Amino acid sequence: MIRCLIVDDNVSFLDAATNVLQRDGITVVGTANTIEQALRQAEELRPDVILVDIMLGDESGFDLARQLGESGSAATVVLISTHSEADFAELIEATAVAGFVPKSQLSAASVRRLVSERRDT
Image (cartoon, rainbow, N blue to C red):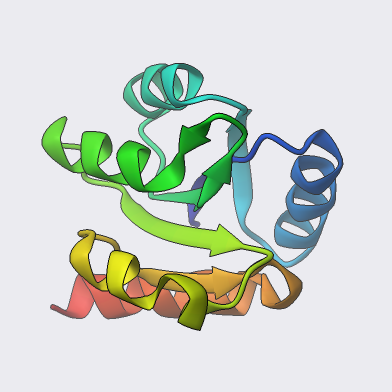
């Protein structure tokens, strides 16, 4: 079973994403709205995957992804956004993440695929 932490500043999206993922067998162990909350929960909850919104209000999901990598977190980090991947392609490529999923296409299958691909490397 995959354990997931979702980081997004939009509470409505957190609720919707939690419902979608849990309905299809991914356990959402926590949600966070800020980098500080996300780092604390990542350490406490030790999720398998962390979904990180690129735009976290005044904060950057890219910064969070870098900090998670520097902290030694074993979690697979996946960036999410309402924007297209092409809008951030260079930044996504330069960040040590497993991949990107548009929010409109977020599903348990897309998360499982990225976690599986990371484990295979």
